[in-house]
Length: 554
Image (cartoon, rainbow, N blue to C red; front, side, top):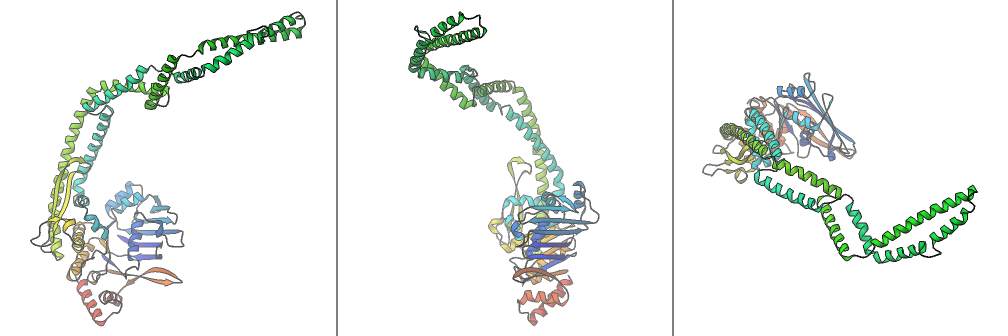
């Protein structure tokens, strides 16, 4: 059970320590005093997400410590399996900075919020008004039903999860082989088209750059021819050409070749002449290749467009396109040779899927058995809660596909009054009826449990005699589980074992929430205030004493 909750810098709470006891703990106080903040603080310590705006204004850090004792075996086993020590006390500590950074510890050891949330399932069960809204969504009905059959379902769900993963892996392998026969044929056809398109193009690495250069030449052929011809004439086509002049200079120097320095110059002139003669030869070749050819230009442009198209479709370069073709050829071979493997995988999948059907059928059988139990039990509880003619039915319909949760579609149907047709919750239940239904469910689920249950204004929409019955139900639950309840109804509050008054006041321009443990006459006055309001009358005090005497003797 929860023994101590310490909260620092959480919204209106500056520094607050609450001691809880076994049985029914009742939080009293006016609306806005901070009762729900105590619940929110506990849930934060248990791993729930908290907004950094919860950090008290002007502070940098909020902290919540929750001390549990006498925890159940499930919680002890979880701690052991997760590597945490437990020696009679369990301290959960969590902080949140104004920048939104959160840290958590379990008995002083670092922990994640996800670990806290998993652990919280064995420590605290929370019922708040928002759960009513969730229950109006039929998709949540299967979750609630499964809580009643959790132990019976566990092995079946584990088997289903294993089979589901195996089928998923086979589907992945089948997909890699192109899917079923029709899908595979379509894939092979597409791959062959892609491969043939590339193969027929007979691409060469670097071909695109070669074509680009050739197109530059053809598109500038007239100017190239003119410039090259002029250069050729300058180098060798007359008696004063560069080559002729170099030959004459070399001949003159040759007469003085006995002088080493002159001979060296003569050799350098000859080297220059040989280089220019080579340049002249290259110019002749360029001029010969520069003749404009319209057919060649058209052919090269078409080829270049083809290369660009293939690069755009299959990669950014010729190298990438050729690599794509190589891989495509391998895929075709794999798919064409994969018929045997595809048949083998398909048969394996069929066997596994049939096993999934068996597990899903078993799961459905367990749920149907649990549904009969919950129908009877809820009807009994609702009768006690003043809804004698209420009818509750669990409808279980098959879904076409099997998931990790089987193939059941679960829907709760309800009728509050005799002669009314049973309809879905969303269409027929009122707010007060829904609150009583959830209380009935919690009362059933509390049987045999050893945990802490939180109830946040579960008496919403009810009053009078029904409120008294709600209080009795909470008292029943508190005999096997610790209950912490926020209520504004005197008939409910009067059944408490521990009364905690939450109030706020202003100090130096700031608002703070505080608590006070009530006893004796203080409890009578608190109940009387709930009856008559701020101005407590003698009649309210008398009535408060009467309902307390009656409730405490229950």
